[in-house]
Image (cartoon, rainbow, N blue to C red; front, side, top):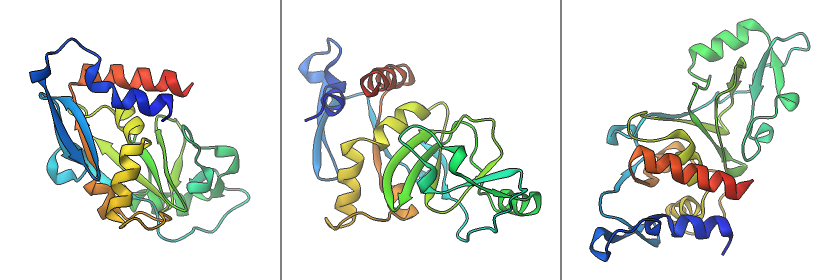
Length: 206
């Protein structure tokens, strides 16, 4: 087991709570021991933890050598950022059309690779005019419930992979649809705890 996964497994044991303050739950095929005051919610916007779960354009725009705007696919994602040097360029007309089609990520959203390479995540905070193609999902957490960096760390963990594998009946994961992403269950502690957990896991990653 990696140091990173050990950190996730021990998240519920970092304080001095008594044994009665913890409960065992099942997320997908795995059991997890968490404090009793943590919630469990799926990412489905109807459950209140997110305001949208969507993806980018389902058609590739025509590239323009003189284009001023980026479009990104899963091949432009790494584990913590978008590589704009590798992105295609499009003109203003195509860019505006894709923005109107809700293909532009919002600041603070978690980007999740869902096609080809599944499970790369990053929090979008870039001051860049970019639109996405359908291989990248955009997940907008509700600010007073779910911290973006905590969610990004969780979505890149084994717990998310196991849930997706369970939904896919154990077959090789090459593509995840939005309906499956909405079913992913997330343990939700207080926002202050989420920030602490995200900081610890980011440090482990570094």
